[in-house]
Length: 136
Image 1 (cartoon, rainbow, N blue to C red):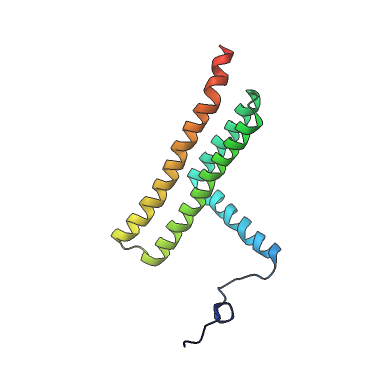
Image 2 (cartoon, rainbow, N blue to C red; image 1 turned 180 degrees about the horizontal axis):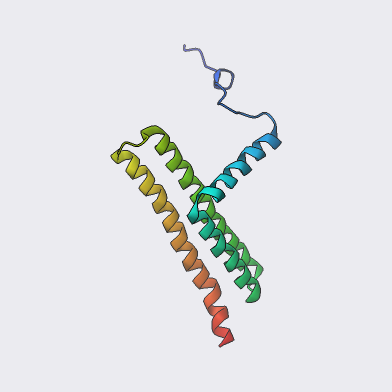
């Protein structure tokens, strides 16, 4: 019978693995700050997010619609961060050489952000249009 391997004991620690939860949060916020500083699309998405929240406040949308709006906003921002991460890893691996698989990775991760953005527009129309119609 084969001897069971204890994967937790044999796992190699990755570079900068932190045993301190506060340091882990610091790394996470550092990643978010990096995307904010370097990604034009992330900044545009934040502007639309804040605008949507303000419009929701002005139109007095329900709490459940606010939750839907926030979840939709978060999904777009999360996917943009993942897209940036995937693009960075691909750039690290392929450097300045063209690689068709690298193109597929970058294009598909950008496609995921696009689909989430389209979904957010659909959600915004669903939430805001009935309220705007009542104003006129």
